Length: 141
Image: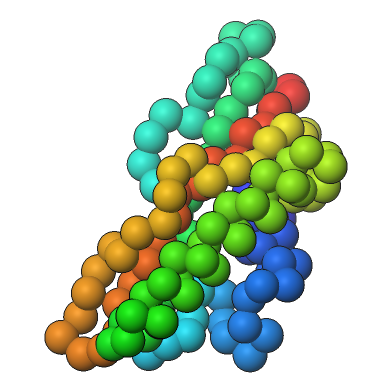
């Protein structure tokens, strides 16, 4: 299992997701409703403990969804979905219900690092919304 696989499995437990909508990694159709987890660039080491082989790490990712944008109610609903998702992440971290990571890794926190926004507006009545998130974890030797 990889960190990205653990995040995907974890997000699949969020009950606010449309049950018949797929969750992809690095892929998203333009047709609503689908979801994608997109790893983001950035430093993975927060602090190192022993010779750079262990320490505090973070995995930055965006959680995206293709959604309808033609009507105001759709656009507001999309932002409300991501607000609820961010609150769910906060609640899960508070309750220490974190992703099960591969051997040698221990999740310590998962949260949205900002607010959701319309990432891409197509020529049709659909768009891609996203929220940036971070999984914090420790890696032991």
